[in-house]
Structures are given as structure tokens and as C-alpha cells.
Amino acid sequence: MEDLQRPARGSTAEREGHIKSVTAYCPGHLSGYFLPVIGPDPSASGSTGAGIVTREGVSARVSFSDEPSICARRFSASGNIIEELSDAPPLSWLAGKFPCSVRIQTSCTLPIGAGFGLSAAALMASACAINTLCDTGLSTRELTALAHEAEILHHTGLGDVAACQGGGRDYRTGAGPGAEIIRYFDVAGLVYAVNFGPMFSPGILGSPDALERISAAYPGKRPDTPEAFFRLSRLFAEASGLMTPPVREALAECDREGVPASMTMLGNGVFALGKEALEILSAHGEVFELHMADSGARITGVQR
Image (cartoon, rainbow, N blue to C red; front, side):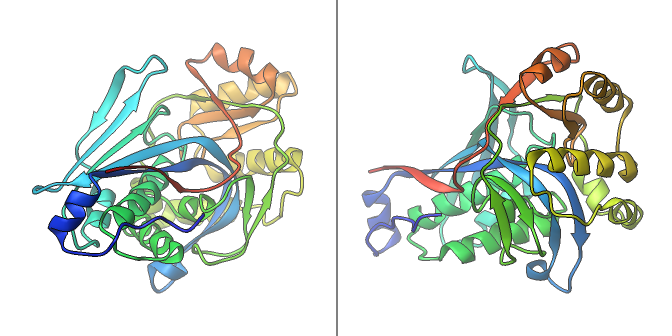
């Protein structure tokens, strides 16, 4: 991520007069397979594994407010609000780490809580925006660490924040945002996804039994090609014990047509590669078109 722009230092009143709001953006993340790593603290916790960073993520607009508040909205393709949340504990925790009171407004077009890495994207975008608005002066590494800690503490994700530091198809070699991440920019075709409803990530990531099953399913290999990524992801999905009947049915159809596909982690849905996937998944619900992201989180606007 590029160095963040910061307003001139001064009192809160001076800053409020200098900048009214800051908007930042962070891409989403499709996780194909992962190995949970629970260390002695959040910085040593997270996951190794592989995924695809998607251009479709979260935009966060942050402004000063006497009363801290959060508004998370999902919009339809036509711009209508189809989902709105005012309670997001990870975002509230994150905002409390900064020395100013803010209103956070996030927006996205993908389903929330469906395995698209939107929790991580909202945290990272918000952290970038608050840092600029409040002139906190935190480095990119420090902002990433805060967003990652929020995910770990609230059991909403393990490796998505780390992955969203950059674009491409990612392979995380260690836990935490400071570990080496190998990135491939080789997903030339479109990725399509369908969702069958929410999957409660904290209930899985906070369960020792579920984490044990997931760990046992981890393939332990680096996917050097998109084909290898989908193949290993699919093996992981089968062995993890997380597949729901609708996911299994959609994947079976992809198998019959030779379409690379797997289950969104952690989400009750399927993602697949190539134009043939669109027709197959369309029979199972609304299909979302996804593109590999070129880069990670960044500031997109400053209103003065």
C-alpha cells in the first residue's frame, strides 16, 4: 500500500476545519484453503494458506462525530440499499484505538458474512481512513496490525487482512500480516460466485473442534498455478467438513462440466473460474462477478 496522505498536525478543532472526511478502499479476499495458527498473541496468530484478492471489496468513509457510530451498507448493482448494519464490534474496537471520535460508513456490493473477506476489508479501509482523518501518523504496518488484531480478537477472520495488503492470487507462508506472502498475478479469467446464505465465522473460528478438522484438511502445498489452487481448494473443502448441501450440489455440477470450483471460506457459497461457471451457478441464485485485484488498501478521497 502506498504511504498515506496526512493533514497538517494541530488541535482537533483545527483538523476538523482542515478535513471533513476521508474515504479509503480495501479489496476483498476469496480464501481457498487455510491452516489456522493460534499463537500467544494476535500478531503471532492467523493462518497460512491460499486465496485470491478481489477488486470487489469495501469502501469506508470516515468523518468526525461527537458520538461514535457505524453504518455498514450493502448496495445493489442499481445503487439501492439492500442491507444495513449499525453494530459491528470489530469496527467499534478498531475505532476505539484512535484518539478521536468518528463516524464510520462502509459500503459494499457483495453479501456480508459470506466468505468474501469483507470484514477484513472494512477494517483495513477504516483504519487507513481514520489514520488520515485524525492525523495519527501510524505506518502501514501498524494499521495492518490493528486491523488483523481486530479480526483475531473477534473471530471474524484469520488471514484476510494479511492477504489484502496487496493484490493477486496469494499464498501466505506464515501467520500474521508480517509473514511472507507470495503473490501470483495469473488469474486472467473472471471468477464467479454464488452465495446460499451466511455462515457464522465466529462460531467456527472460536470452536477448537472445528479448527482441528480444518487443520487436518489442510493440503500443505503451494499452488503455483490457478488450476492447482482450485484443485487444492476443492480437496480442502471436501475434507474440512464445512460443505453444506447446496454447496455440494453446485460443486457437483461444476465437476460434471469440468469447471474449476470450490467453496468460499468461510462462507456458504461457491466460487468458480471461467465463463462456463456463469451459466452453471446462475441456476443456483444471484451470481457475483469477481476480478483479481491489482493492489491492496489505499486512500481514495479527502474532502476538505
